[in-house]
Length: 332
Ligand code: NAD
Ligand code: UFG
Image 1 (cartoon, helix red, strand yellow):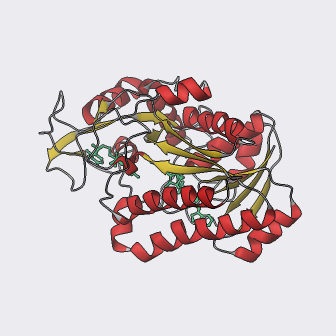
Image 2 (image 1 turned 90 degrees about the vertical axis):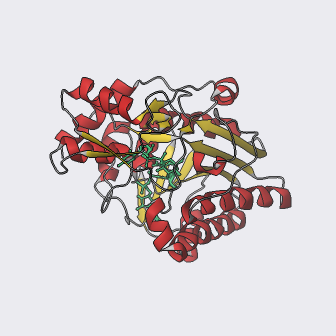
Image 3 (image 1 turned 90 degrees about the horizontal axis):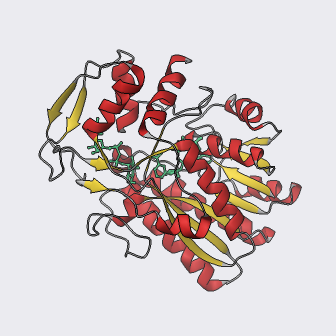
């Protein structure tokens, strides 16, 4: 199949493009390089063992989208492009609604007019909110967002369901990622966040590299075994492979399929820190501070649906995630 990957030079997109090439699919990337670099495309080609086509541009640019669809017989779109920083979304809601929702509307309009109606969308476990109980299952009602970023994911999920209701030919897959971490085992691809990171693994990385004195652990008094927050960390290569299974399953099968992509196992902040030290030999000094607003105690997936319907499950361990991140960091 020939796949248009929006946001394909980003963290999850780049790993997914490698897996697409390895599986023999054609890849066209559209990315405006807001949070990634152009030379990633060449590394994807080297690791995936194939050529791709790269367009530098914005998903809100309808004329560009039309020309891409006119030039290539695209079978499906994997839609990663968007803004993803929770804290920033509170300060810049218009940008988040504009890029994430506005961009998705423009992309869907271009797809409809080109007759390409298969899309895999990057959603998030954030859509479960704080109203549901772990493990989160796909048939639970979505919760209430605590920030504009989360709102955009809930709204886009609804938008895509409404699109399907208006035209049953659409083939939609909503993938709800839990906490993607890790890097390509080659050390050639990884997470390279612009600005000040917010997420746990990029902050552990900064401490490991000596750029920060210590990790501030947000809350030591949760109702969890060691009092720190529990999350479902998934290796980005496992996550990328989940996209290939999802794509191959939904193309030609109209409807809206929803899958959690996680490991199904929760790890506390201190457990992840311990795994990092065991994998790398680097000590991470920690200081327990107050809870971060909006955080919940537990977030992990029920992954049985993806295993049953996609024959996919995460294989890589926390040790793999940490060792691969460290290899990526040392090659920077
Ligand atoms: P990323 O920032 O590394 O990748 C996103 C890519 O989209 C970047 O390369 C960026 O340059 C591009 N982009 C941004 N705005 C664009 C625009 N207007 N037009 C074209 N390209 C644009 O992020 P990621 O971690 O790879 O996340 C990919 C998707 O997965 C996002 O939609 C994100 O919300 C979602 N997601 C990520 C996580 C996570 O923890 N990383 C968790 C759940 C969901
Ligand atoms: N944490 C710390 N110190 C830090 C950073 C994080 O203790 O400096 C803790 C958090 O309190 C939480 C855990 O580490 O317990 C993970 O935090 P992240 O920020 O890495 O991830 P979240 O689970 O809060 O959020 C992630 C994505 C969001 C997404 C959400 C739900 O960043 O985009 O998962 O899917 F919405």
